[in-house]
Image: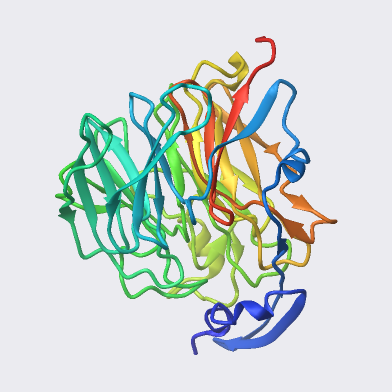
Length: 399
């Protein structure tokens, strides 16, 4: 009997998203498991300058507003001339932002494309690549930064279900990589392409599964020196406040990362049983994460730093946005993290920007989402709760 408890919980109205505790007993394959979790979302505050002063960043860094009044901005991309593009899945738009006087604040904000459920964006060779739930489009980038008409190059991607925020990016091999999240919290998918990373030619043809067992890897990228692919995957909900942790994976062709049957270092998700083998046997066929982060923090955007503005020891490190939890009693996420690399290998995850959580973690004024490196070397990230794109700049002495 399939366990539908987590799927039903996802349909609860927002009015219940306070400090309500939920438990249920689930019986499946003669195994009785207790699935536990808290439903809690911090109260929303305005991103006032007084609240921004509460942000904590490493010495020498500043956080300012690059643009605001953007609705619910999600993913970001920057063209070689410094034009910034930001998507909004809710509005289905791509907005062009330009800082023509280079003072760190965009003066131009213009919608340049629209398609229902527009979310992921990538730029390559004078074209923008955009993805909705089921399709991928491309458009020419005009000299003034606006976009030409959208042309469909990929279709029939699986329906979204619980995770319909598709993202895409070009790898060092020139191939187009597309992340397709799971339709549920933990279940057997009806489409083989759900909960996977796909790869295709730049024109959308010859699509295939690159990696599977990925619940929802929205943020991914390639280390600028080693060219190895990494991504942050979302852990499973309803395994408790501290499980399952967010996973930082090395993404390899043909690999299986365990979802929905095992998580972290091969722990069994007893609510879903693999067919024809035990959880331990299945775990031996999967890849474990290299690093983990706090459960339910919800990693979204990820980018490797390849600019020159930050100190040298930031070169080749990754930055990720943690959108923030709803499935634990004490909020996690609502911050930016830095994945430190040494000799081309990830060594640890540390907090980079904190302070969006206020009032003893009972309120927040920002949910970090998309992230990118600007041509001037600053870091830009979006807040899809309050319609802001922030700019992180280094103004201290270089080391």
